[in-house]
Image (cartoon, rainbow, N blue to C red; front, side):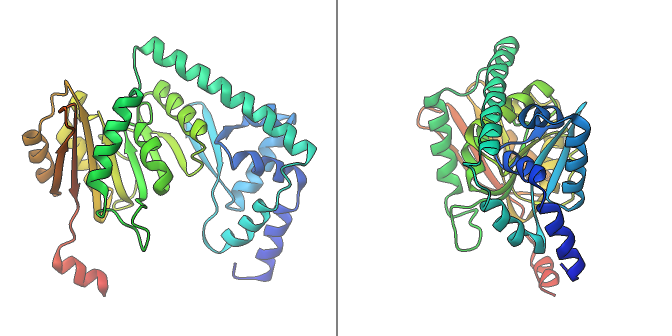
Length: 310
């Protein structure tokens, strides 16, 4: 904050009990205006007015998903420490906030039921426990010591999960990301992934409408991009990988996962990766050959590195 007035304005925004109630629940899950009215018992116009003030103060982020708008807490820059101190001081045993959390739990439970219904209607199955563990072990083997961020080699930086589906990569890598964005063209699968994120308490993850052939993100904005069981059903897999490569930062990584029955093999994948300007790093298969995981990198050229240093 550059002026005393900016500090005063932020304190004024944070000093309202209703806005603190809204922030308290949004720290635990992305919610729509309608869901927030259910949680707080307030009218929609009143909730919307508070949300606008919080967004204007850069304390919340809004994400549109067709006819719905989801809100989540996100504080960047010089406001972060003050806002975080206030958020951490919220009294969770306050009767009003405790009541809000009870209603939030009901909403999140309803999301889980709806997600199971959608998967059944679509005939889609999430990875079972054994398969998820196998994928996780194979992914971990490739990522170890290759995507370290700072002094913490367990971090993966900023993550983009393309065609998130049931959210397997969010479950696996979301806890290790600074922030995670998941995109999928299917509204039904976005609802499923959002339910998964809420269930696992991944408050650093957001789910958005997105087309893998036309990603709406700035170039070089992610450290790790994942594509889990996406390319095997893609009409233009090479184009999808080119889009993924464009949003990778220098020295960022693309992680591709395909399971048994996929039309993608190591030779095809290697060709697509090289055509997109990426460098293959390593490919690994599970012991039973049921999982193919490939890691590639966007290597910064020597002349780029010099210019970047300047």
